[in-house]
Length: 400
Image 1 (cartoon, rainbow, N blue to C red):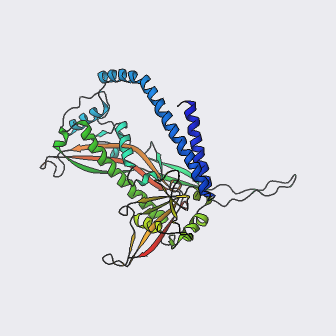
Image 2: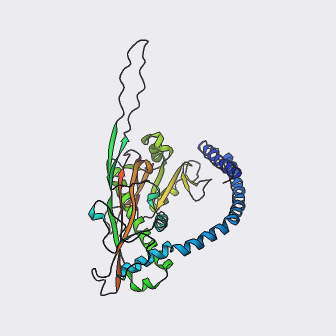
């Protein structure tokens, strides 16, 4: 990126920061003016960037075309190669794509984690596409910290929060007193195998490589996202959802108590609110003493909603994050809507092995009689709570 574009981008970011600061000072009109300036600068940046990209494309177009011809002559397309191996594994034929190391390429020290004959690992670019798909549509993985790991197990040393004690006075020529040393806690992780089986028809193998991979990508991404959502919600509930820890929320002041008092100031600065559709609907109807709704769009990003103009609100489906039923399930007397408030990246870490493997079988179970192929998909990860004070759970009780 040329210097002129970088300087313009820095100006845009500075305007955004200034607007955020004005919002915290409740200077809404001034913030709007700064936002409008940021928008105009962004439009200028977009036009200049397009012109710059066009110039770059003209220069590189011929080079890319020449490289593509060379690659096509020397090496098969990764997508086609993967699908060919996929078909070969299902049809029990030998793969002809020798240039790409896919078949039986997974090998771990633990024999239970190896891939049997007919198994293959997903090429890196396809794995990246699956990862991108996984992080959309109610993906709670975006909230927490994700740490790629290269080993099956390990540990992290985390400093515990402690009361800060200042240094004592030291008189001239006097001995220095001892001070308390930092306290640390060891967090161990051990990646666990997660997976499932997709049953596909033999007719699917007659489709194009793009259709086959599109089908597999969507299915793998959906299952992976659902798995991670379940693990994150379960970890939140386990670490922060104990009955004695849950705060009863009645009105806006209860939310302010959490931000102002219950959370550490450093955590409150980056805190978010996670709730479901029911909780958001309740919160969205609340008004301040001036009759204004307390939830307002972020002036910098209008698709984002802010509580008190500061704290982003993340809303997920009530099917994913469920409300608690009060009374008999067939005739409930009320509901308790959940609110998780805090910095989720500080609270929870996913240790992601970032390896994805698939295996095939046409003979297991009832597959043979129905002319189906079983596609077994496996990935490995672990999830741990790092800071047990970084999130607070609250509940709002409403009548049925």
